[in-house]
Amino acid sequence: MGESTVIIGVGNPDRGDDGVGIVVAAIAGSLTGVAVRTVNDPFDILDAWGFADRAVVIDATKGTSAPGVGTVFDVGAQPFPPAFPSSSSHGLGIADAVALGKALGRLPKHLVVIGVEGEVFDGCGLSAAVSAAVDAAVGAVLEVMCDA
Amino acid sequence: MPSDIRRIGVDYISRVEGEGCLRVAVRDGEVTEYDFGIFEPPRFFEAFMRGRRFTEAPDITARICGICPVAYQMSSVQAMESVCGVTVDPEIDDLRRLLYCGEWIESHVLHMYLLHAPDFLGYESGIALAADFPDEVGRGLRLKQTGNAIVAALGGREIHPVSVRVGGFHRVPTRKELEPLIPRLEQARDDALATVEWVAALPMPEADRDDEYVALVSDDEYAILKGRIRSTRGIDVGVEQWNDLFVEEHVARSTALHSRIKERGLYQVGPMARFNLSEELLRPVALDAAHRVGLAAPCTNPFRSIVVRAVETVHAVDLALDLLDRYRRPERPAVPVTPVAGTGHGASEAPRGMLYHRYEIDAEGRVLDAQIVPPTAQNQGSIEADLLHLVERNLELADADLQHLLEQSIRNYDPCISCSTHFLRLEVDRG
Image 1: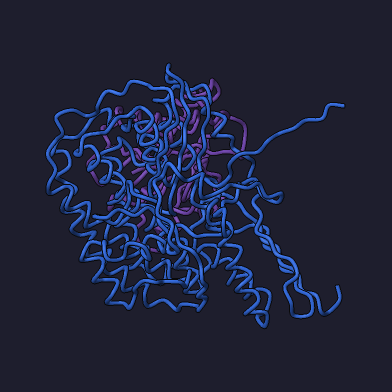
Image 2 (image 1 turned 180 degrees about the vertical axis):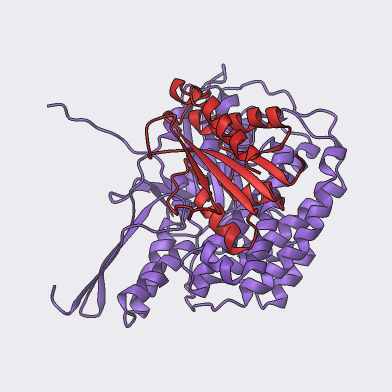
């Protein structure tokens, strides 16, 4: 797999579970050899996927379900919820980045967003509930890769 | 409600950092009540600093704002260096300027393209704007990413950079590491010049209002990192005299302290203040761009602040290119700093205006007292004065149109309300 596919981890590792996207992206990247980008300003997501044909974005969510529960959105197959509860505290959220990419004609042909519900958003390291969910989230990324 | 009474309430002001509210009461064609309130919880950063090591100030205070962390780092390190009697090497000051240029570009471009321009063109958001102006918004994204790249290259990451320390940097980059920024900045200069033309052509409400403008001023450069405090009505003092001239007051409706000049009241900091005090010190390419679109000091219409931001973006890009051209890796990343008991003062020009820090430390380097005066707190009085000015002159507008105009007016200041929440004395009566 070349640069036409990219895995993007969004978050801040100094905000507890907000760093789950970065952890999942790093593991999935090392298993697949796919290029990995790390973004802590959602504004930069468009730059991170650049002109890739396919992108998988992993971010923490807040307020949707029990900690550790994952949500997978295939942006081409279903409308992306405008209120996707990204845990970002500044600037754009994932929903804004997707909407902006769409407006600018800069969405990858195949874009999948994987959210992992966080529990604790301060301090370093992941909570137990979210740590336990990392394998499943990595599995969800690999599944997207295999669906090509 | 009687027909001669209009109440206009804006409970949530979108596209500003933090949250504020605005209430206006009109009776018989006269404004009888108005206030701009802030209802974000207090954040106690000055109290957090007490008891911490003096070396922790840049990393702790940077967390006050995710948009302008560099400003907090620069004001705090300069305050600590002043109390300890340390002067950093000129090469380190230049690197600090370069880092600051990155933050100005990031912050100004975000505000212009995604937060403020939609107001002028009647769009509800930057995303809606992008659908009709994809080339322009794409240009804004490209510019902002160049600002991000500068901050990441010098600071280690785009948000909350980690390389700044009292005395200098933890590590300074090699020339080779910074060289990839040069072609990006050359593109950015073209983009920034195009931005000046674009924002200058936006439909601009008239709202000129006499105000006292306050900014750091340096004799030989458009001040970003340091300077003396000057105003358009004659103030000219060192930053250590901030508390002699200005005072912070608690206002019941807000968790932000409001600042005023002791002798005469409200004043304004920010891009217009810098421009009005230092226009001739802009980089020539920025000054030419300003004059080409008819912008010259004094600029007293706050809606034109978007044009000043664009001009300052050209300045920051061009200054960054100059600093990179001259860059040689400093021999040492930092000078040693030994704590000295006393009080230190530091101020720098955050994207939104002058940011003043004062710290008292003991001989062990523990912080005994801290004072942090962010630009939005200093602008509260001017924001309210603008609102009153606009309401009084636009009472004929329908509520929705007037609400839009007032929200746009608040965004003229790019108010980072998260930064302006400040200090609150908490008293608990337990019977």
